[in-house]
Length: 470
RNA sequence: GGCGGCAUAGCCAAGUGGUAAGGCAGAGGUCUGCAAAACCUUUACCCCCAGUUCGAGUCUGGGUGCCGCCUCCA
Image (cartoon, rainbow, N blue to C red):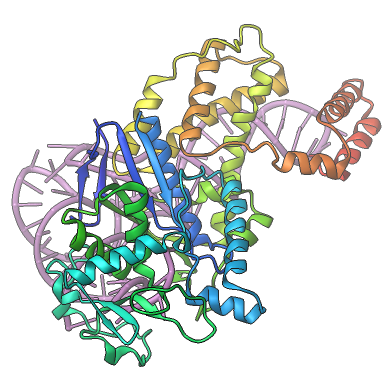
């Protein structure tokens, strides 16, 4: 069996075939750098990181590009509020992006293009659109004429005639609406208002609209057509629809073969939105939750379905992660067993790998893939516990090593890895005891209990409890 | 008004027409000086109605309920 992917464009699952054999070009819409990214953004970064890892696991060479939008009204507003500059705000939150994404174990992209670094390409594209009558200038603005693009609406499955302008209730009466020939025309270039950052252009000083930057950056970084273009489901319309209109009008071929969109992270069944004020930032979440537990939480549902963000769900994921982590960590116990080889890597357990691959091949069914991990982890954890509590294990060493290696490898494909600077280190710093010292105390307590010296045993137990070890 | 999605155990969540994965939580038990830990065992007729079929959670039609998109959002 081989990989099939649900393509938003065709509304079907399709066999995955790349433009160039063995190579995947992938573009993921990144953040607008005006704040820490929220838990919904995190789903995008984590899930498509898994897509990337799985493609690599399948042997593809993946070129992965994710942009930063560093020109935008929201950034500008924040800068004004802070008495700062757009550039300063953007730099700060781009740095914050890396900090948080790293903690979530999201692999670094091959390239992170920015709107401000792509002004030439943006202007060139607008110019080409204008020459071919897809764009028109009006008072220093430049708009895309959606009527000129016959296929407008093909990605989101709608027709211009059937759309209700302003149905979302978000659009106020804009003063530039009368400049547009059609209400669905959108800005490619915006004339600068006094005091705003601006770039010189044939249409006057101004800055790019939102959609055009992605068209220009894809072209610059990956060429005309990419294999996978991805983002949150809300980007389907208008953002990705507009990207298609911009790019395909000029290049005359598909911008992307597969359009992938992940579902929302909802808060108590409702979409996160600024107006409701229920936005949860990943940066804040990671203060109280293990990043890997959050990653697990995000992968426990299929990517196209909405996830409800609840404390119960997070707590459950935290427990689940502990199970996986225990199994992975028991490497320390297993490696002491005679016959455990460090050098010779065993072949992986084929039935587990097959089931894992089969699940992932079916449009990245991570919940099933995870069930394979848990089955391995439960066995390993039991063996590890028996080793610790009874000093022996029933599982043959070869089987043990094979299972552990399989779990380790598959968990890696999902990006679930114990991070070196995790809470172990923090805990150790907090209680002032090293692992070795704790082991000694536990041993002393066991000796005392064997000798029926319960008072001493309880005393050590209390001491350990005070240090947060149970 | 247009387009689309979802409804499976206490919670989360998979599921290719043949008698329901996995996680979390809970319950009972073993062990123990007590407790914890650990280990073992255990928990579903799949929103409603009708139909197709030897057989439907899985297909068809009709309900009911919830959700998303319809120009600045992941």
